[in-house]
Amino acid sequence: MEENQKIKIGIIGTGRIAKRFLPELQTVDGMEVAGVYTPHTESGQAFADQYQIPYWETKEAFFQNVDAVYIASPHHTHIPYSMEAILAGKHVLCEKPMALQEEDAARAIALAEEKHLVLLEGIKTAYAPGYQKILELIHSGVIGKVGEVEACFTKLEQKDRRELTDLETGGSLLELGTYPLLPILDILGEGYTELRFQQILAENGLDLYTKAFFSYPNAMGEAKVGLGYKSEGELVVAGDKGYLRVEAPWWKPEKIHVCYEDRSQNQRYQEEFLGDGLRYEISFFRDMIQELQKEKEGIEIGEENRQSLFIEYQKAGKRSIQSAKVIEQFLQEKDKRKRGKEKSILSLKKEDREEGK
Image (cartoon, rainbow, N blue to C red; front, side):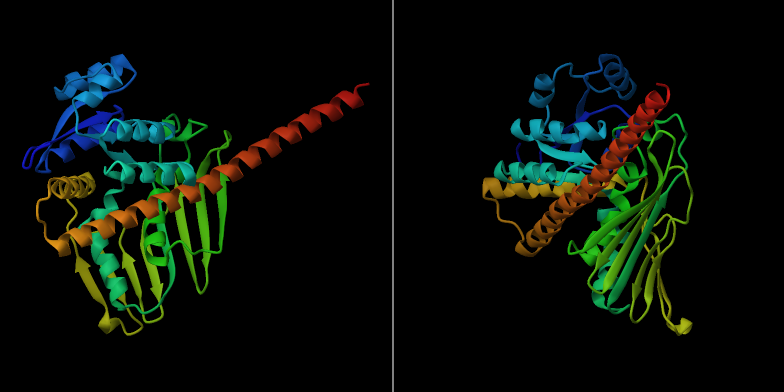
């Protein structure tokens, strides 16, 4: 790929998020869509026809015609597609959650580093101006030492949607959990000593509402997500001098409040959040690809800007691994609960048979 040449990005998957991605991509200079791939020919061709882009019937043809890949397929396919794309020499922007297991996330990130390619989990909030302002305020010390981070993301989903029917990768935490984990992990870090979950479950076993509690030395975090119950979607960070509150929907951060005991000292910040917000993660993805390309070609680049970009990228990778660790524990507990229920049913059936003798 030559300097100033547009990055050709292909899409894997044709779901709702892929349809939101395309108009956002058009707002980002230096990138263009180069087609779509899905093993489901009918939906792939329909998507291609709707957006007037090529449909590639095989992964081989798809990879030959793109520089980068946006993975918008079902959760359990994210790592397999990411690994295939990296091995084919392609940069990867992967929808959240990137991985369902800590080891898978670490393995994919290590492979991308080895191949000198970008692998980025698509979390639009992380790259929005408002979120960067939140971190700037907290790190400046205006609310003092942080004691708690509490983040909530809920939306009432239709009961027949994939999110509430897919028994393997559905449910509130897998669908929405990456968002509230973002500020908890960015602000409090990965050094929690305990993680526990409380849930309201549907009849099929999927979580309709989940709270994840993080215990840190002298701090705590609480992530709340729901697809079947609605709550206030705020972000609140408690400090020993004051607190920071981001109005709902905090994951589209625009209205930020810094509040004190003396209310006359309160401050309010208004930040910009454009469109659906995917443009922010796409822009960061583009910038990282361009920096790696310049480095490869020996082009001199501004050291300060480069260092800042790579620090943010490395932080994103560590956060993806930690998010996968949380999800892995959640799924292990879900599986344990399922096996316990099955064991109870078998035990009851055995008792019934014995009583019938």
